[in-house]
Image 1 (tube, rainbow, N blue to C red):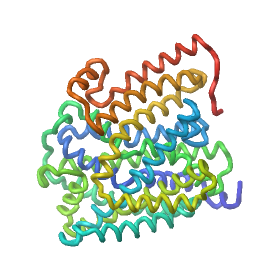
Image 2: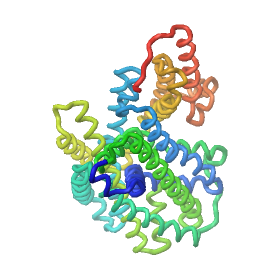
Image 3: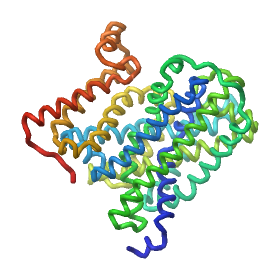
Image 4: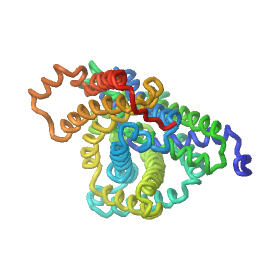
Length: 450
């Protein structure tokens, strides 16, 4: 073991890495979406938060475990078990989604909308320059932090994350000791399908997608900290995943609880940002809004840092002619520009892509665990992912352009759970069975990364 590694005990590395991973996952969306969901779920908030935790914390944990278990070098290597071209397609789509096209610009926009805008006059907030100035400073700082990926554990795990958790804890503790009001009746589909609605709401966090990327960041950060033993590296990576998922689940439960109890005072609000702002203001007035500003900006900053580092590292390997620094600058500039297009546009554009990528990601993670069961046969990967892809494309098309009433009725009739957004499950199972059948018939070509 290196001298550097000997200075840090395994327990210290476990805690610091777990907190770093939590901070990388935890952006402003992880506060905004459960807060709004809590309002909608009302008295059914427990079912909703259980569904949200599954996609918002459970799936990211499974993603970390899948990468550690599979032995894949990165998400492209894992997805290439389907076919090499699919590996590149999936990895590029995933990195661009959680990177410069959606998630990274959203960090800057949300940080401004929730953290800064409430303190501006109406006339000033309506102008272009405040968001432009803030986004330049925000992404410049994110770029600086991302330029030393080997120091991510120290900079994020030991500084930003504890401050973030303390800030959230203060607000959550106050709301639990002194709830704002009585629970209200559930709204819309939360009346009958609270669990499913929470499950689908968890897509918005993008954390299951990011988990396949952040697992590699964790490994790299641990190696930079001096961990060279593969067994210890695996244990620390898995332990960090469990700690991060536990922290995420606690925060989701607390924020959903706050949202569910807020309606009696705030009324029904359009988004989680307004919900959080009203809650903070209710308890502490302007000081509450200042606390919320700290929470949101820290959450957004830590996520932006991780995403810049992850995207630059991947695309440098994909196109080695361009350096890590050059890609980091490029993605930072793109994110800064798109952040100025507005939060509503970013979210609206991202939903169709998420409706395609999330089912593919979930199925790929499950296949990684089932890999030994079918000896890594390519037929199983191809047939399962192909049928999942077809339904994912239908969901993406519906989210982007809509489907006719007759088409939706037909799909609901023949695809179980399609009407609640889970129509990809049955085709994925059918594809898996078809793949096993093809293996039994043909018995050739083994694909394995071990």
